[in-house]
Structures are given as structure tokens and as C-alpha cells.
Image (cartoon, rainbow, N blue to C red; front, side):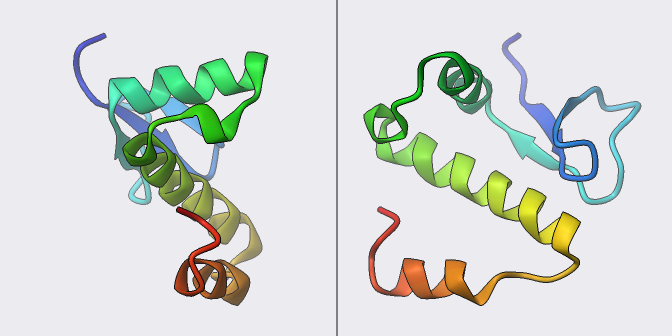
Length: 84
């Protein structure tokens, strides 16, 4: 589809607008396709930087939602440039 999808961290995946909860985040079609490809092919580093950044943000929301807090390790990794 040509429109943005919604990522729901509670359900850990894409949802339709009618099923989206308050914590849902928009995901571009390109990021949705890239994450689907990663499930089958692997190769995170092969993604363009802008898709890695978008996917990382969505996955961070997912982890934070299920843990009930944000991991300080993720902030530290971003500060030292591990995730680029």
C-alpha cells in the first residue's frame, strides 16, 4: 500500500487504523517492507540509514512498551554512535 502503516508496540506489529491503540506509531511503507524482508533475509546493515533509523525507533518503542520503561543502554549506544 502507498500509505503509512501503523506499528502497535503492544501487539508487536502493523495494525489497521481501526485497531490502533494510543501508542501506535506511523511506519512508512518502505520501512514496513524492509522489516518484512529482514524477517526472511537478515542483513540489518544492508538497509539504508534512514530505514535503519526509522526501524530502530519503532523497535525501541516495542521493547520499552513491554518492559514498562526505556532502556538506558539504548540511549548510551546512540550517544557513542554504535547505532548509525
